[in-house]
Length: 86
Image 1 (cartoon, helix red, strand yellow):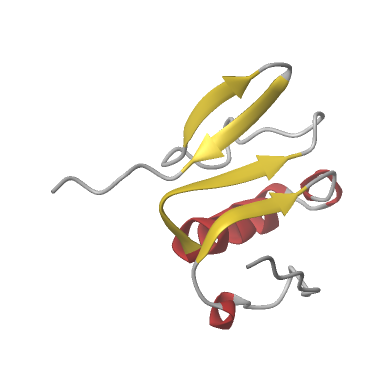
Image 2 (image 1 turned 135 degrees about the horizontal axis):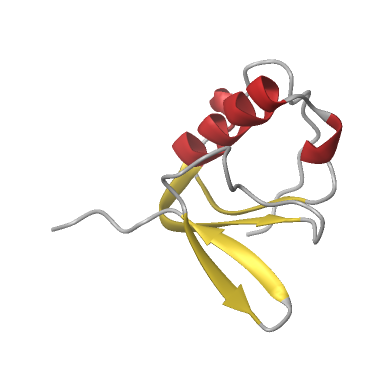
């Protein structure tokens, strides 16, 4: 049930399907703001409702993306795509 993929984050990668969890650790810090926003938009679209995005400890979505809900888990900060209202 686990699948690892290598993608070029600067290219569209929406054809990968829906994910419950995306790990993108210590990568976004190397891109400019516009590219980080575009990547996070794609992550948001790919995540299932209630899905999680985990970034590196030096990364956050403040000022980049406002649709995720942040949640602290121990020392880590995770981002969750909200559940759709029924």
